[in-house]
Amino acid sequence: MSVTGIFTGDFHEQDKRWSAVDAYTISHLHPASRPNSKALIRALEYSRDQNLPDIASYPALGKFFALQCKAGNVKYALEIGTLGGYTSLWLATENHGIQVTTVEVNPHHAKVARENLEFGGVGDRVNIIEGAGLDVVPKLLEEVRAGEREKFGFVYLDADKENNWTYLDMAIGMCVPGATIFVDNMVSRGRLVDPKHQHEKNIAGARKVVEMVGNDERVDAVVMQLVGEKSYDGVLMAVVR
Ligand code: DHB
Ligand code: MG
Image 1 (tube, protein in one colour):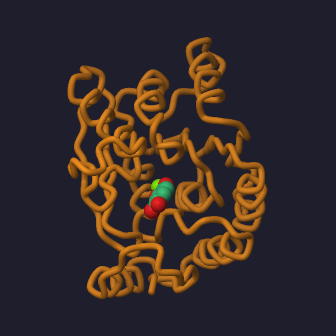
Image 2 (cartoon, rainbow, N blue to C red; image 1 turned 135 degrees about the vertical axis):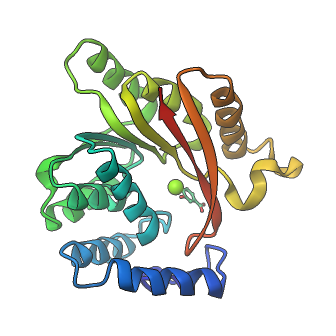
């Protein structure tokens, strides 16, 4: 059972210890009495009711990203892969000055996200751009280069995994020095290093990110393995020099 108990399938690998630790720590560090708790729970419920897949961030990860923005006093954040807007909702409700730009290819997901963000009172600070990342991100890069768009202090890549290096490469060019860039689903239950899975496009995409970033002077990076209510997975964190 997940901490929120909202999506109840057995899609994700679960461990009673991981869930119990998340439930205990969240109950103290982000209890239901927080101003955004109701909107966050409602966003997951509505996403489930609208048949979105159970692949949003979970509470601890959403808050971790929001705290990264707080620590960096981030004014402009970029997300590729909006889904139901759950991570954007965390970023915008925990950071009152932030402007989030988020890209979503699926019109139904974008509609659900818009409703979730409106309900959370942050619809005016989250701009959902509908389109494929491979079409939209180059345009954003052009706008930043032309001085028509502010540079980002935080980027979260959580869309089509096979293109993650392309997104990361462009994102680096759109960031201020010291910006943090996170890439989701880097570990995939250890498949990252399992020879049987290395030719799957998602895993090949993750490995390309690791290997390209390792030789890239523009960023310094690490992969953090994570457990929690969404399986055993992990994120790459890159800091822009
Ligand atoms: C899965 C998880 C994710 O976070 C995602 O972005 C896509 C897929 C999964 O578990 O399949
Ligand atoms: Mg993901």
